[in-house]
Image (cartoon, rainbow, N blue to C red):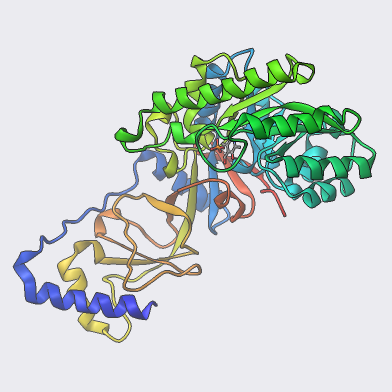
Length: 425
Ligand SMILES: Cc1ncc(COP(=O)(O)O)c(C=O)c1O
């Protein structure tokens, strides 16, 4: 219970009573599950874990994978963004349906696990990891995966390349270096040819220990909702690709010995992957989150994708009209005013990065406050929820949320068909 919210809430009721007719009284929003969630609720009650769980709908996932596969055509290749789908079972499923062994990884413990689970993977690191983190990777390396052929480290500054050069010398190995480009996102990366030249010179001067492997240009800003005045998707995309082309031309002209046709020219991200059908420079397209489509990816560039991940959690208690501590019976004024507070439920867990999905018309009670143990949920009686029924949420993002629920629950046709462990570390 949040004391400050409680006081504000109580004061708010006073204002409502005094100001009465000035405010529009809310109407009841509650609706029962639609058929999709009715079936899922029955299945989870019968066969589910009856605790908060993360459900992946494989029919919907298939649809989203197929969208990507239809878009990313040779000579471009699809690269799975591992952090956004952080479960080896899930990644294995995607990689088989999409026919790709390319991964983009961002976290040293995950990389060490990936190389064991997917010894034939081609891995591009998606952020410029501290050199010590790379050293820890080599210390823990197991199995047949060969980093000198299958792994590209991402570097973003000449100093960073220098650190990786020292590591390579210490290991007596050759490291493959991919260079991060700033193509308009301004989240770091190389922003001009001068710095790029310094990095390429260092690589060119140390062929025994470093190999230039390509570029990474992440451009989600071109697919996100930005105010129109700042540029359309197409304008921002064109600008980003013009920068990418300038860096590629500079490298081809000034460092011809480093340029090879099999360089990895990585681009995209979920918001823009489809726009890359229109360009012929990149050959490696990263997509992760769009396969599950959490709410922050309700973008006009992803309208062909469907939500495929839900949090489901049982209702533990159903206690009628909302009642607040200390106000006790006087709390009736809340539900008298707002019929969406006529039902109060307490659910198993809560306070996730997620939005209510089903049944429709559920609302949080900010006066009562959040709980990660037993979150309060209010609704009008129309939702028809009973104890043991599931409340369904849509996550706002995938990468962190998927790690929070233990084994992911894979469903197909409304039936549980598999469980996949999330990544660890
Ligand atoms: C370098 C890079 N590429 C691609 C992506 C795209 O990931 P997603 O498709 O999950 O949005 C990300 C996400 O953060 C990224 O950092």
